[in-house]
Length: 248
Image (cartoon, rainbow, N blue to C red; front, side):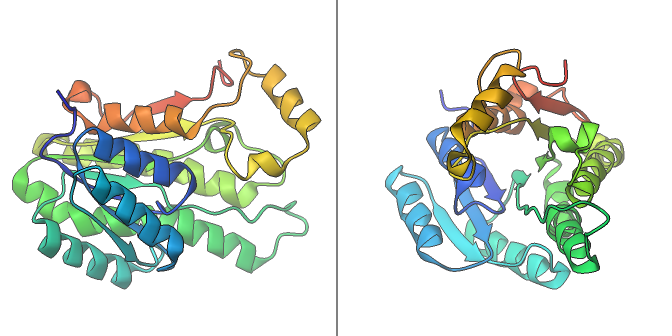
């Protein structure tokens, strides 16, 4: 029995990396998938085709998640195409790292807009539909950095910490409508980006993790499947740490 049969999911920032794996894992579990990314490039089309080959309905949308108007328009298009949405994964995010002393306003504003404001934008856009159907699971992608902070990432840490507060508040507001809202806080996840790092540096990081390995995008995607499914029907307002024990 597939865990997400009959459900439609929206995944933002899904053309590559963790978002892409989440979309594929959802399709594997039977969900129809609408996904967004900033550009209508080969990555977006490739994922759309791959999802369709898995036997589910799928469509990619070029959309700026940091824009309130564009988010409303995109979700409206998705609802016309798919009819309903039971799952939202707010995954879109960027980094613009630098010490606060040297960080400029643009670096701050971009990260807050794409990482945090986008969560507000998309959640607002799906809210009416989820309230009407009295069913929904909203999953917000935070980070261990949002929990403990990190030197050189004041903007990123602030955006990811903001997501945690937003998640708890939404859970309190919407629980009576059977809409759940949870966050995932990934730790050191090994992706194409980390593959470019010096191997000795990566080995050093792995040694600090109790499970002695970096996480995989699949580890995060599996947590998303759990929170999106009825297996987590009595869980809301929580932060699920997918970090190998980093913050233990």
